[in-house]
Amino acid sequence: MKKRIGLLYGGKSAEHEVSLSTACAVTGALNFEEYEVYPIFITLDGEWRRGKRLVKPASTIEELQFGDDAIILENNITNFLIDDNGKAVQFDVIFPLLHGTNGEDGTVQGLLEVLNLPYVGNGVLASSAGMDKVIMKQLFEIAGLPQVPYMYFIRSEWANEQEAILARCEKTLTWPMFVKPANLGSSVGISKASNREELTKAIEVALQFDRKIVVEQGIVAREIELGVLGNDFPEVSVPGEIKPMTDFYDYDSKYKDGSTVLIIPAELSTEVVADLTDYAKRAFKILDGSGLVRADFFVTANNEVYINEVNTMPGFTPVSMYPLLWQHTNVNYPELINRLIELAIERYEGKQQLHYKKD
Image (tube, rainbow, N blue to C red; front, side, top):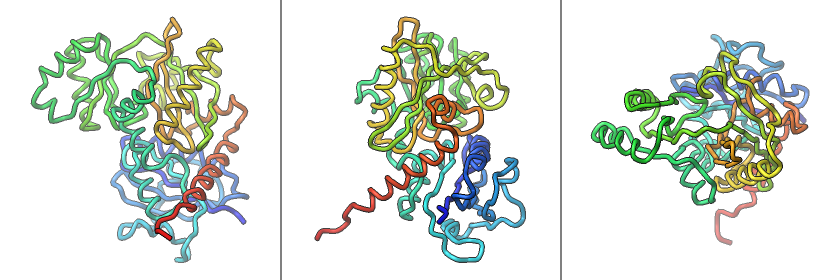
């Protein structure tokens, strides 16, 4: 029998468009002879819609946003569990292709847990901790992973202590600094600051996207990424290097203008690759990861390695690093999708063995 897959994508997030691109790419990698694919779209306003069962890959992003024939699930979002004929659908796996807040941060994962549905990717804890850069960094400290200096604050502190925060940044860190929303990915809202005026502007930009802000020490280093795949016994891909032609690896260079060179595998010493592999596994395990993670690092000219962050639902667009890393580790795109689905079922079956009452 074919496995029934629910593709969940879109989302009320600044990374909505990235999710649509990912969903479109994934439909092109799924074997429709092996899977029944049901599209479930979340609009930018948070409205859930279910389209008709897909029988072939989506040719455009617009096709995945549905027309007048969409079923709007405004009264009960769990109606996505009903098929086109009004009968209950028993999904083998939900594939959440959601990036950013309201999707990658543990919220949707919590819903799927309550509904007792198997789903691809990280669980509630890993998703929420991996989304919040401050919590992530604090866990990395516990795991003994080297990081660049940083500080953080929330919107209300900025409103009341702006001068003190700027002074603390200048005392604790050196120029340049990178300002990031704590709970976003895909480089949304990230700016580089080389003086106090730019720092103030960068903080104001980041505050449009989150109430918690991270300011990190700039570092002259190569940007290296690795893919992690698995559950309890994760595998790590070859490393890849990002060489942005712009000042840094921002949203446009990732998804729009193609102004970034990806070098896979990256030219690194055996010792550095061993450290990167070890750190990637340790980061995955401290988060209690499952399924997949992309681990991002800095490597200096002196071969010092610093972990930057992990992404618990990395993009699957044609130019995304995660699938390219595995392609160069002899796991092609369709096989990668299949592996993720198998890992989701494996984790779900393990959870079904838990006892919820005393004998």
